Image 1 (cartoon, rainbow, N blue to C red):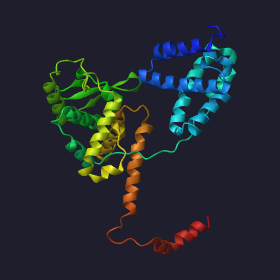
Image 2 (cartoon, one colour; image 1 turned 180 degrees about the horizontal axis):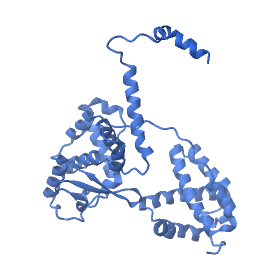
Image 3 (cartoon, helix red, strand yellow; image 1 turned 180 degrees about the vertical axis):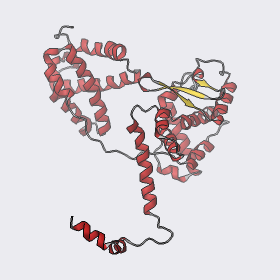
Image 4 (tube, helix red, strand yellow; image 1 turned 30 degrees about the vertical axis):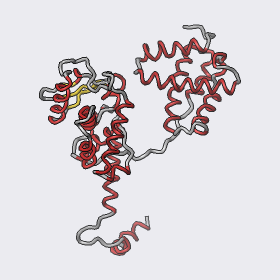
Length: 338
């Protein structure tokens, strides 16, 4: 057991260098997200304590300071409830670590861990119609530098429903182009999954890599930037937004939608659902841990059907509600007596 009077900064260093990376094995992106959250938290605590961050001690880390930080995220920084909850998740992990390292203050740390997540408004999941996907792909100038890469990247995003980082991390060796063509995606928690490729997608990838002279270089990034390095998330986001903007002339409905890389993931799931594919297959395809996450697509599809039904009338002309009630008055009277 480490001594409970160790300096705060030494514990912060151990949290990131050893606990997160070695013991929990979280991804580098999670480490960065936690780093940003803890950094903001310590700056807020230092400002209210009127001393530099380097002078902070473990006694300064209280439930009150955590609540002050969370309140300022929303009131001052104008962060959304979702962002606030993500910062709180990072704080909880950090304070759970402190509980084991500094048991003398465990009671105060437990108060921070017990701070509840805020209920966030659930926004409607956006996705693209088939005609919109076709318009976007048709708008890509495949003859310009990088055009063929963009076309293949967008096709693969739609085919696999992969997360943007999963696509960025792909190497040439992760794609099997011989029948049956598949791609190996490495998702959250370092879990891998195999996703089938359409024959057209496999042909596109094969032609793309052959022209680039990288089809036999298994360690090379599948999608590279101008420097020859693996393309980043911001690069993919730029490509997605630019191509969607360019396609507005072909498909005006795109102007009303906010489109990012994750939109392709939702689109892949919705189109599979509408094609009659079982939820368990979609869950495996997308790499969802919880089936409840996949069920969200069912809710969207049902809501769309309800809206469509509300705009339609039966061919034989369904009576209005008052007429229906009058016709079944005897049943309603009986129900009223219960």
